[in-house]
Image 1 (tube, rainbow, N blue to C red):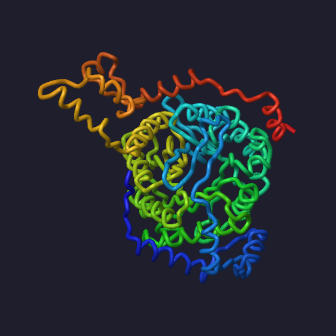
Image 2 (cartoon, one colour):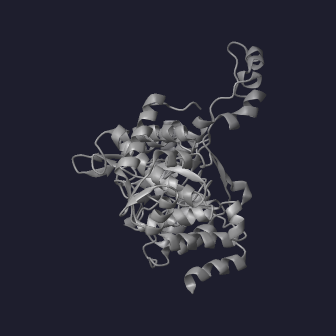
Image 3 (cartoon, helix red, strand yellow):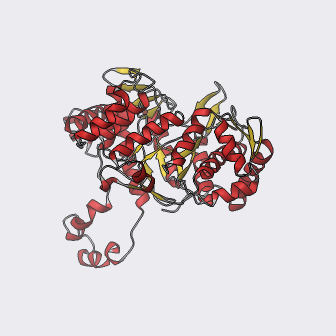
Length: 467
């Protein structure tokens, strides 16, 4: 599928040049002393906690970022290639609350966490997020390893790990390594990805910087992420916000490459605008989609895989607002050339809540978006001239062998949507989509089959938080 280009090449280059000026003249604050020491050894200028990046250093380190890598899974059939052409979908991340039609809105628990992992295991989701919901009933000191353990236990898809500092990051990495043959093995075949975030504007805290170093040292991929709020934490213009956001992201990418040249990176940007009536972040806005388009072009300019947020909504429940905001933000993420789409399902309330019903509805949207992204195959077989000639005027194609051979591949088969006529729909109870989604996630949990984890590996992982 052709990508949507919202800016010209010259405009992208002007953003890049402005970002370089910001990095060199304004600088980026790194509170973590080891990060400043690493950057200084590679030619950055430090003054207190502020680091200034010579443009030549940035350009040099960008050349070492790989344009593709493979993220390995417990089930080799579920390995994922992350590159600049394909699209990978990841689950909801970092929400403290969950909601469903039966119990309403509540603080997330480990039980909710495990249910979302099980659902995503059988959805169109390719990679598990680190925090599909915050398991707030688990001690924060061990929460990160409990989440890593349960993700590895209940699914054999690739996963994300902790970015809450060097030590927590290494614990997640080492736990994953137990399942994949040890630390040396995963340095050759990465298995866990993180998302260290900037502290906008133009700074990194100790925890996120420590995470960048940990994942780079071990060769594990990371989504170096900037979430700017245009009009609040950055200028009230999209171009100005992107220039600042880009400077932040590039600073983290340069650090990772200084630690380990060739360390796999996904350019990650989740910026949007403030609702100026409340100063709150708005993620279901058209500006959010515009940011996605620009960020996709920037990442392609650097020839780096790009993370873009997916099915986003500011609605507080699974309603029409949640549906239309999620549909256009997810589609724009793919049209922008997003290669790693985080928050691809479930998110409402401006990242604060995951809806079980919306997980199902967004799964339908992902299926549709994947079909759109597959595009159109044009050859003699698909043009079907011989079939058209054979059937001729006033004929029918529904029983033709060509139709039977092609429709399953050519047409998306709905996971949830209702397409029957109104009479049949009414006879079956006239159930609205939200109620069908409620029944669907329960059905999926009932039919879930756990991918077995060898008992010795299970026991080894549990030692991380039981001792």
